[in-house]
Amino acid sequence: MGSVAAGVAASHPATARTGVRILEAGGTAADAAVAAVLACCVAETIYTGIGGGGFATYFDARTGEVTCLDFFVAVPGLDGDRKPEPMVAVDVFFGGLPQIYSIGGASVAVPGVPAGLGEVHRRWGRLPWSEVVAPAAGLARTGVLLPAAHARTLKSCAPALAYGDGAAPYQPGGRLLESDELLFHHGLATAMDALAADGPEVFYTGEYADLLVATVREAGGTLGPADLASYRVAEAPVDNARLGDYRVCARHDLNRTVDTIGALPADLSRPGRAAGVAAALRNLGAQRLGDTTNVSVVDPEGNACVITTTLGLGAGVWLPGLGINLNSMLGEGELLTEELVPGRRMSSYMCPLVVIGPDDSLAVAAGSAGASRIRTALVDTLLGVLVDGLDVADAIARPRFHAVEDTIHAEHGCSVDELTVLREAGWQVVEWPDLNHYFGGVTAVGPAGAAGDPRRGGVGLLL
Image (cartoon, helix red, strand yellow):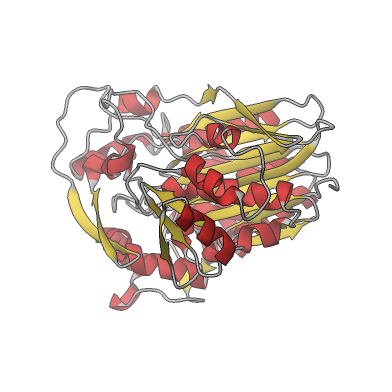
């Protein structure tokens, strides 16, 4: 397998171009990934934003060290002076089935994106912070075109996204934005300029902290000054698993992605492996729509930075005059896995990962969107690249299957032989009529290229 080229993979052309621009300016993988995620916060607000949370995985080519940073949302309530008001229930249709989510002020957890991006830049960045933020601020001034895949997601999630102040950007004049129309968030450029000038602290202890608290509380939430002031980025332990001659490294996520890779059958030849792969992927969780996005970057020195972020569906609680929607993580039923203790991090399926080759150099940098399907999407992509010999674009684009309880959900075009093996192993198979964003949204940089997921309008660009 050849060495990994320098490049950027993302779920929007403007996001990918931003990352490449920063690499061209001499930035590291971390600089480019931070700039690209900030661009996501302008171009991909259907999936993510400044008011969300996330995780980063960084591979240092010089030392071979892998670091995982946790800047996911935290449970509010440290101020202890308020009870949350009821959340707002919304029906979101997904795969034809209604899913009930809750939004509103009480769904807002403590945002981690500004702090997380600041920490990634502090540790591994080379360019000045203001230079890394500048491209996103530029995009915010003009707005960006909405890709067709994003327009489809907007249609599914409109009850949450076009709620309240979200109607102005997503449903101008009463009509939902469609493919190739301009998505513009009034005031977001102001917020980006302040972030560039004052750093991430502007949202935690600086100019916008009081506004954040007042806005959430007015909408019935509990977020307080102590929640913001005490928020810190954490380093997460790194899990490792072997896949042939390769080592997969990532955080320990709610879906145990790395453990799943370690549990794959020894014989990975097709079609026989299908039953063993399905058994390893068997997922007893509920099926939720994951509004998440990922950026994967490799720089010319071979460093990699993969960052996955999310807003949930978005709370429909917007910072006045700043064009920022806040996360709805406390309204995501499947993430409420344990007692919600103020200050504690919430759980997540997100799993940005790197794969290290036999010679200790980088083989793949990848991450995915898709809630409980993130693991499925990543495992299938890695099997495609590392076992089946596909390039990253073909590995990401090929049809996937996802295991839920005793059922296999298979995208249109899945191998007939593999589906036969699965049926013989006792699985019920539901065949979908198309490739669908339900099955995740991988972005990866690997040998011979960078690629985004066609299910999410993804783009890969090489330096």
